[in-house]
Image (cartoon, rainbow, N blue to C red; front, side):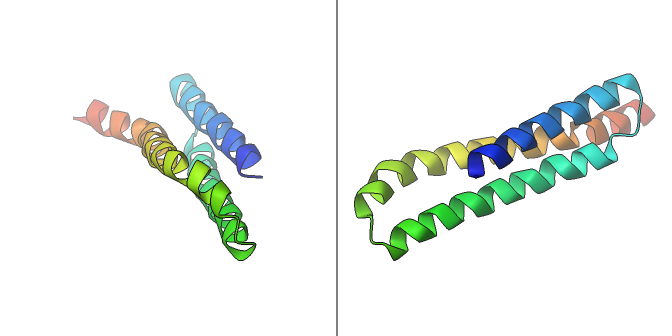
Length: 94
């Protein structure tokens, strides 16, 4: 599930950037991109929670360390890309 939500977040982020470049209202796409990023993180947390409940320590040891770094990086990139149009508008107004 987290993969599907992550792909939707990526698509919404690119729609946000494309709409900004086209001069259209991008705020809904920005909100969707950030919302699906949050849902992706929640889905990943649920997956880890299930592994803990069934005591699948091997899965936790294999996946969690690498996914932690990836999720931090991708979340930061998502936030920066989604707020980039706002920052560019502020820069252009000055």
